[in-house]
Amino acid sequence: MRAIIIAVGTELLGTDRLDTNSLRLTETLLRHGVELRRKVVVGDSESEIAAQIRLAAAECEVLLVTGGLGPTADDVTREATAAAFGRGLIFDESILKVIEERFTRMHRKMAAVNRRQAFVIGGATVIPNPRGTAPALRLELEACTVFLFPGVPHELFGLIKSDLEPWLRERAGEVALESVTLRVACVPEADVEEQIAPAYAEFGRETITVLASPGDVRVRLSASGRDEERAARLKSMTDRVAGLLGEALYSRREEDDLETVVGALLRGFGATVSTAESCTGGWIAQRLTRIAGSSDYFLGGAVTYSNRLKEELLDVSCELLEEHGAVSEPVARAMAEGVCRLTGSDFGISVTGIAGPGGGSEAKPVGTVHFALAHRESAVSWATVHRQVTVPGDRERVRFFSSQVALELLRRHLRRAAA
Image 1 (cartoon, rainbow, N blue to C red):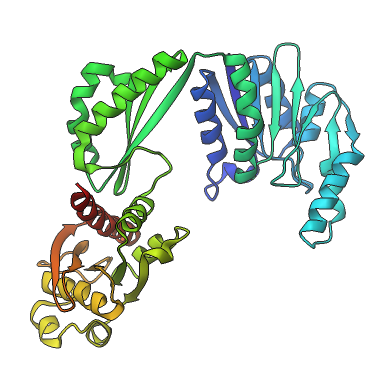
Image 2 (image 1 turned 45 degrees about the horizontal axis):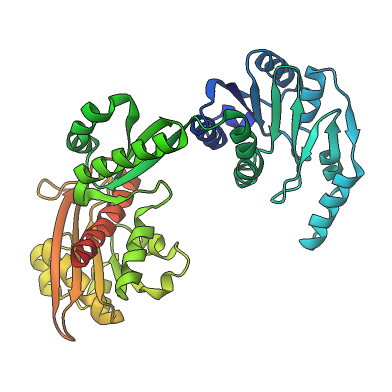
């Protein structure tokens, strides 16, 4: 089965909005063994949308269109699709009632323009959208099935799961493509490639993809075939590559980021953590508290950007700051231990560095960052480890990568303790 994706929206032709919907649809199609022939992005022009839909429907068996189902004047996907196939638009009172009830539940008055979302293409099947006001539509043509989905990502993702995937499973049969994503933090892409190289010879290079982003590398493993055969091969690949990655592997799931994994480990140990941050400006604390239930293990943090606050809040001595400077191993260690004393946490993470673009020197260039992890051993003593890295790139890259290194330092400590 061949597919084409059309993403509608003038904003997608600029630089401010990424077309993440097409990526999610692509992943869904590949997982069900559907061949994706083309992706198209088109602006909010009714004639242009109609032309692209007409052309695509003649070249594939399933056409997925996202966007342009909203209530405003530039949402013209319904009209364009109707025009492409010579269909009319029919006003559906039952859809209007659902939309009105949704606004009532939200204690909001419905604008008159929302009535536009109750129009249905003649002969189309209405797909309820419980996450939004615009229903999806499915149009069965002689050789092609056309899906019209809303462009709001969380609405689309829900409809993929509830409607598109069951439709694909029914038609694709047992032969499909399935993937597993392994995640690695703070290891260069080239090093990951070198570690997993033996698996290329065993399973084929085309089944393993390395996807790198700053501070995080994804290794995607893919297998196709019938259910039992595919599952067995994928398990074999996953176990082998995970073994090759060793301690560097932090998750076998695409959806797990580093703060999720660290939080689960802390909760499993019944341990608490606090943060002392300088150059990251609270980024580590923000990532930890992004996780629901993080109050189980995160006690608090201190953003001590100035030397004065390092002294007053974290009890870092002025002599230490004067002798070594704020960006140094001794100060990082003192910050981690100081935040443990301040909050009473089991672990303290500290980071102090030069994010740039200014402030660097020959001895301490921009991107120099010191980390420390303090682990409370008694009421007055800590076992503290230190790490220094030099992070290339702009200010935001230095700050994010530093938060990643800090969380990975804690994750590895907890993992070793659990072993």
